Image 1 (cartoon, rainbow, N blue to C red):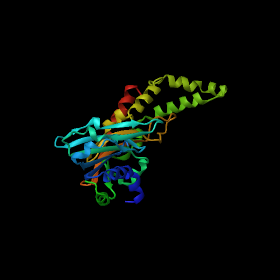
Image 2: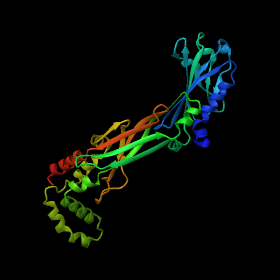
Image 3: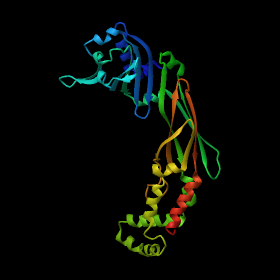
Image 4: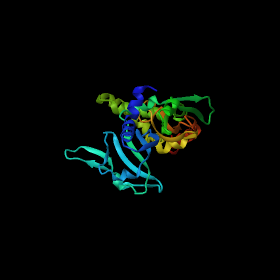
Length: 318
């Protein structure tokens, strides 16, 4: 792992660690890191042994960094519990903010505490340097398409050597571009597409003479079964590719789980660009030092999408 990467990701953790190193008679027993990938948040946890005199410290122990968003403390021994009153955000005159631990509010019998510091990663793209992501398309049949996914920590040994008793990377994402172009091509009737093109061509015409010449064609279109319903068909088709609906046509297995999906930028060849050629499906997995790699399979049930498209067309009489 590059030193610059480690410094950027763990600089706040290192800063908190050094604060506790300087406090007399305390001993750091363990440190853990959890990174929540979607939010780009690092949760750094320290387990610290404290002497009986620790509560006599009257000055708050300040932990100040712009990226810190939360600080909490828990008593681990002899009675595990969160001690909410021992930490708070302090705002000084002039607007300067800091988080602080107040030792006097810790339980008298407490000799082991857990301090959890949550902070925002300044550059979320740094997470890409922690993980290798791969994906691919497997040859498949008429009823479904299969895609494979792989994610792996790049430097698990180096992370372990940093002294982390635990290192978790939660919700690592892999995005698969699921092509829907062939299903649209196989099911959208050429007459429907022809009517759309004619209608939009006439509507875009600025020359009154050309508009007049197009009237016979418009009258002919008006006699067809779906006349006036093209826009409803388009809206219903577009709805198939919204996350709440398209998720019915995909399924994720093994170490990954389905997270979300969204329409790709490239659109199917229609006069109005609202139907995608691809849908981007996001799947997520968790990585740890004990399990640094994840495998997954995404199944795209293209036969069900074909049926849904045909139902929309047939219900409109095309």
